[in-house]
Picture 1 (cartoon, rainbow, N blue to C red):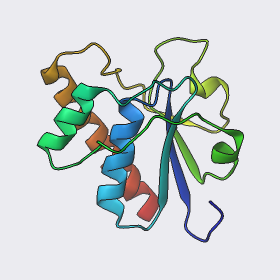
Picture 2: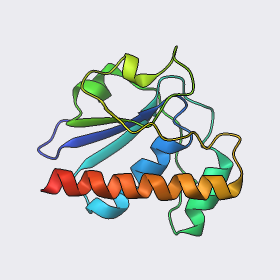
Picture 3: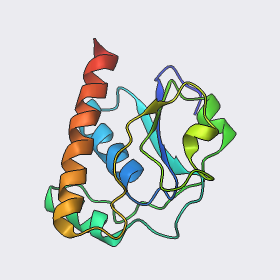
Length: 136
């Protein structure tokens, strides 16, 4: 992970929804100007299937993505870390990461497909705003 290209890290608890969505949008809009990663403090066994479906509707394939465990190495080597939001206080990434940008976005877990679409739209907007601020 050591390079001249800045690392951006999206974190949440399960790394099964929000942070995966953010990683996908960030990759789409930055054309390799940044290395982008996502991880969770308590990763799920798979990416939320409804998230995979909704992202596929807009042309982003998450089929090969796997939730990953947040590590000190990922945090220490990141130029910017974004906490997507917390389901529970005990495993909230912002408790473990200093200087984190918190978006407080609702978790798509157990939500309807329409709610997941709205969450994806919100994350896309936040990612675009973040990219604009980084490139300014």
